[in-house]
Amino acid sequence: MRKTGKSSLFLLLLSLGFASYCSAEENVFTWADGGLQYSNNVYRDSRAFADAGYTLSAGAGLKGKLAKFTPYKLVYNLDISGYFTQNVQNEIFNGASLYLGRLLGQNFELELLGNASYSYLPFADVYSYLNYYGKPSLTWYVFDHTSIKGGYIYGGQSYPLYNLSNNSTGYSFSLMQELSIYTSVKASYSGRTADYLNKNLYSGVVAGVPAFSIELRKDTESLVGVSLLHEFSLDMSVELSGSRVNFESNDNFIEWGPLQSETVNTVVGDERIIQNYRSFVSYNAACKIKFVFDDSSAEISTAYASTEYAGRLAKNSLDVIISPEEIRKDTQWILSALWSLPLSKQTTLKITGIYEANDSNDALYKYTAITGKAAVVFYF
Image (cartoon, rainbow, N blue to C red; front, side, top):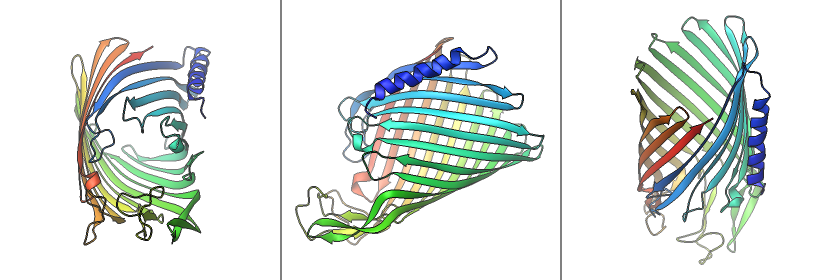
């Protein structure tokens, strides 16, 4: 796991080597980019630590057909992002994904999605993890402009140095309806359950030391959503979406007291266990507008989220639970813009700006953040 750089280079060379042996009918694509970023609030909280950083990525892909009605796509990518001083969340990401499709007559299509990735955090290695995901699905084209899709989800995460390893299973369903050649609407539902392998719940605190039960953490998540896509022209499209997320977890948390933790527990006896600590309900809405100009393209997005936790208690700026007690509630707005300018046939400049405002009754999470990124992408 530590040999991240060598493994990344090996996988990239393997992908390029595999692509070089493919026939001319296959579509081989490779890319690399590098850029700079700046944020006035790297960790997105009220501490507002500002810093500059960098982004680097490279990848290779191959798409084509195994048979007449069997398309496929294989992609590997390496992403490196971080900040120079506020580097706790710096990440090196290695990922590979596979898409495989198969038409079954005129009314059905079978698809298989799969990916595996490893996220390495060099300054917080305890949180490095392997992620894997697979989803077979079947689409039924009921009428010319109506389709129903259902899939089974299997995935999980493996933390070599931490106790958050889990396996998850779930289902997804969607109904797509084309209202015209320019407009389509989609309703969707997905649900999953994650079982943790070695995350025992707390049963109490004895003389300042946590005690554990035999019960393991289990999460259940469901999402109901709807989206509308309309193309005004070849140069402009708008997508509207909304969703409700219900996340339920039996995981609990020890509140150690103001400005304290398990490793710095200066006042023994003021601890308490918070049940349903991670459970929440969130309502979300988003709008995305895409423009294509003569010599560039742009994308403007806005997103809104209202989140209410089930058991997590709000704190003031001194890390003290508010009295009378209040359940944490957040309201978030995000506005982002992306401008892409081709510099040549093989080079594109991309500039991104993001503004985020989070209003919360928990002082630590009441903040604003502005992030800017500029990168040059090379296509080979």
